[in-house]
Image 1 (tube, rainbow over the protein chains, first blue to last red):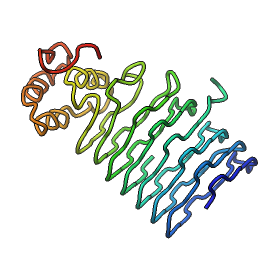
Image 2: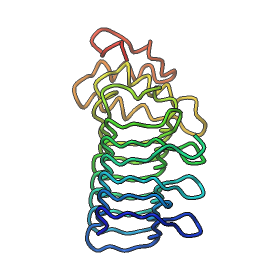
Image 3: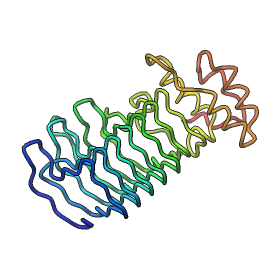
Image 4: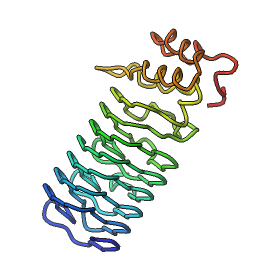
Length: 92
Length: 153
């Protein structure tokens, strides 16, 4: 559960949270997550419940200007991105 | 891309003001969502693309009004859905515009038959018939007729 967490750093790939191939047997709560350091990576993650990113503010980007990378993620419940906020790209 | 969601995907009031280095505000190609996908009241960066190529959606829920700038900036090639609500679902003229916006993209045209099927399912046989008849050109004018929906879209 990362509700309300603030992730201000990043690794050397520009990721604030690297959760590739993560497996969650319940739900993943990232509500009101605030990210400034880099991207959130959920590539190939499996979440057996819901993924809740309601009101998350994704102000970080990786090297490709992606704020959230969730390729091939599998969510067996709902994916809630209601009121998620992604700011302007660096190049805009 | 290639994500699988067995429930719903809600992007209600999402503010996607950025775009990646491919110009996408949302890159969801080949996503599969068994439930409803809510793309309502969203804010998308000017000139940025919602990419839903070859996505499969159980129920696509859109705003009644077309997105600012129209559908042309978004890539819906190969998008499939079982049902559609809002926007093109109740407005055949807007539906034709959506199809026309994608018709000249390479590889695959947006399937018109699923929208026509949706019209037929909700009892709008005239819109379904006209959409099928106009499928070769996807011209909004060819299916614009009294009772088919607003001409203000």
